[in-house]
Image (cartoon, rainbow over all chains, first blue to last red):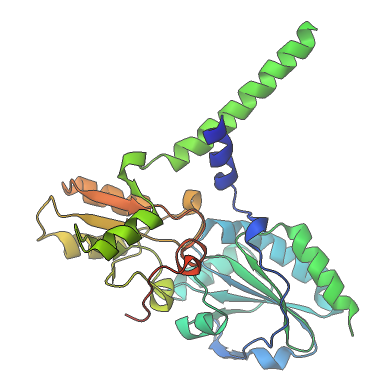
Length: 161
Length: 152
């Protein structure tokens, strides 16, 4: 039974014990290519609350999170939330297909090892950062995270002008 | 009383079923073929029985951090990645000690190690172990202070 409980816990994606404590350091700026052409500059979103999601198409917990992010973007986009997906896939083709399949409604860029390293090392997926309107990292969530946790963080950050 | 006992039994059955399903996923690689991070570190530090270390997951993650001396031959989830793996090992003796690892995501969700392990088994390799990484490479290796290298 103990083994079963252990296995059940590890069979789920969400590991709230892995989410780090709240942080308050500047979010490293970057310029990365969008999957549909052009570039995205993170600093251009200053003044918005940004949910920066490092993910990949082959990552099962990431796939499970995506519909939640689509819903969050829809619900809070008008209030100043901007979700940005940073794909850690090796190529854009599967990402474009995934984007269409999941009706993603936020920009997705192709990540690099350098950007991952700048964010402290993206050494497992998914990892999501909440960034406040002033460009500081508010929280880092490692592993699949319950939508209610993001909802709470986003609502808190949106209240700050 | 009978209803309560029946309900309790049904609940217990449901819990066992869920646990068994999860356990089945977890145990798809036989426990005897897993190696813990702690044991691998000790082995590498001793210099004895040095394995060929192959990371079969994400190249992006490999570039940021990997076990020193390991090679990238992935991803195990794709046929292209498996072909790379087969090509790397094709000339090796079938009793070569090989350790596979990934660490992309939680163990039960990893799409890479099982196919890679199966591929080596199908080629006749008899001395393969898989590094058990419960959560991800960052949490279970790097943050533990184990040796790490960057780049290709």
